[in-house]
Length: 382
Ligand code: SAH
Ligand code: SF4
View 1 (tube, helix red, strand yellow):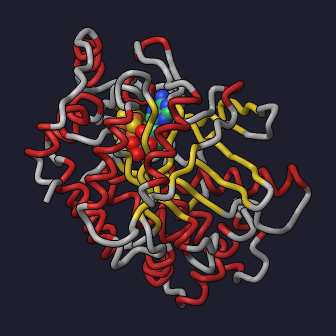
View 2: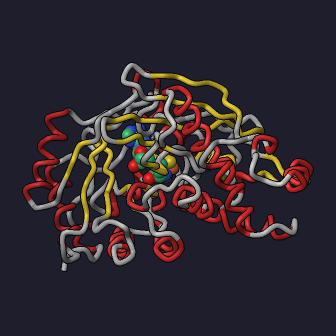
């Protein structure tokens, strides 16, 4: 059986090379060919001994995902659909900005969390991506863009694990992929510029702080458990008080001195003044200026039965948080003409769970606004 070298971080590649009787610095050379130069062919690796190249040819491959389609938006955003086999496809989005290039990377084919407002969630879950499939998205995008733009320099400066899937439910494959992104011999990205976004798997937030502390974004979406239970079902297992405490603990190891909270603005559901005030209370229950809010205008899709808050409502909501000293920004929508905006990534998922059924059942239940008492009972108010 051949090994796909995209599955290995530098440590893994060093072990692989040692087994072939090669020194560690050979692994470094090989790693650089793959992730710095985008090489796919061992023949091209001119500074590796011919005998080593022959061994590699018989035992290893560099096999990226195959591209099903590529769409370029009027604003320069690019979306790729990659085939991951078994009838599944995943999506990756490149977002160019004047001072950075951000790649939004998927971690799973589908997602088992089943958030009510997310089109990936509505498709159910098929499987975790491998490390190679996660890294492949960056490998393809980076080397495609260099060729496309005719430049030798790095194009992608930031990675956000905000594509399809819940990255912390694919922890084992995620960590080596993050290490390749951060490695100076690989993509050399700064820890501050690699962000893991999670719907809040509390024990895994703690593990991430020890194993690979990158920037953390947490999808909060509601100020109290009663409402969050309905929007992000995972909240039943890891309620807000536990989640907030885990975020606060993460700070001691984080590359930045704040956690980002994402909050998807849903008209009449989580966008009232009352919700904003409850959020302020919850944040202030922990000392310091320790978080920022990123309000995401909801990108509607028909099956959700939800609509986006008006721009005025988003503005007022942001003002309440800002006035309380919580830095709050509103995320600009990019690439919506090619369905590449937040929460629109749907790929193609052969659901192997009952998530789709569960969501269909949920959809028929109206979302209940939740009174303050839920907050008082949740331990946030001291
Ligand atoms: N599973 C992870 C990362 C992927 S989702 C997480 O939930 O954090 C990335 C972000 O897009 C999350 O904040 C998610 O809540 C948000 N999102 C999902 N569906 C959306 C939609 N329809 N409109 C706007 N944002 C959405
Ligand atoms: Fe999964 Fe994130 Fe979508 Fe929730 S918002 S269903 S966790 S991808």
